[in-house]
Image (spheres, rainbow, N blue to C red):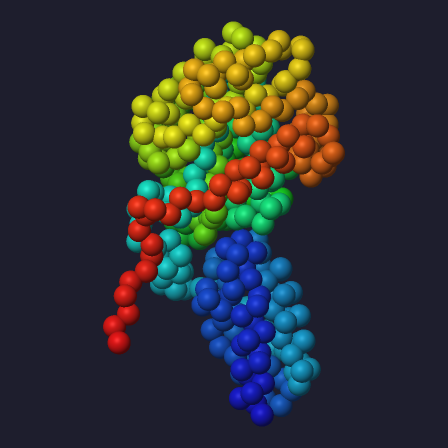
Length: 358
């Protein structure tokens, strides 16, 4: 009877997930021991780090799961912390052996969002696109690669959020179903970041290699405006990435936006299409069509000027969630739907499979 109850308790624990790593605690070797005597269960739980921010949530979920097992009426929960050796083994297992998790062989679709100049609504568009994709059931990660002008944390309501570090692995905060990393999570809000090329490259590389996003369907990157160091680094690190070019309808913006697409192509990246933001009479007309014509790609969406879009960004609640009937939200949701249905290209990629000997 005790053996059966122990098996049932372990099964219940396998349904408890670490809210940061998004994997069952049993798979993460956080459950060291389970015993059952009569109706009393004893569980040894080992958290990844001291002061784990998810500790209360995990402990609550463990208690609820175990005490819901028929025949168990008491729980003695011993909560401790992994040893350095256990923690390093976990990090190695999660990270795997690939130096670049999102390299050409990865099944994750990588989409970089770029623009020729600032102030065109690129980050707002990227944040809403990420949330729109996540709301369709996709696993989505978002890298705020605009080191100097980071704004993604605020747009997604993550102001003040800090990543959790397990060994040398970084666990990104989650907002609206999107895993997010930004330099804004590591510096004080009033701090001005003034770094040169090598440090910028190292930062972007660390975001792509040391941050544990888990298995993603889509990784979005919000690039800084222009064709500077970060755009070049992304081209070197992720030459297989697809690119969305954002522009306003203003004719004068077309030439500037075109350059960002040309730089992407020079590094081997594929330009998916153009997104015209701030559509309406205020900024003229034809900018999106002109950039698309010059690059030989389609205009994928036209996002009109919208007060709810701006209000959602200020409040940290993307318009696709806060005001889904707004014309801007409708355009962004349609863009997310279009990109989601394209899926990931599998031909020519290696799958993580190996033959099994009989």
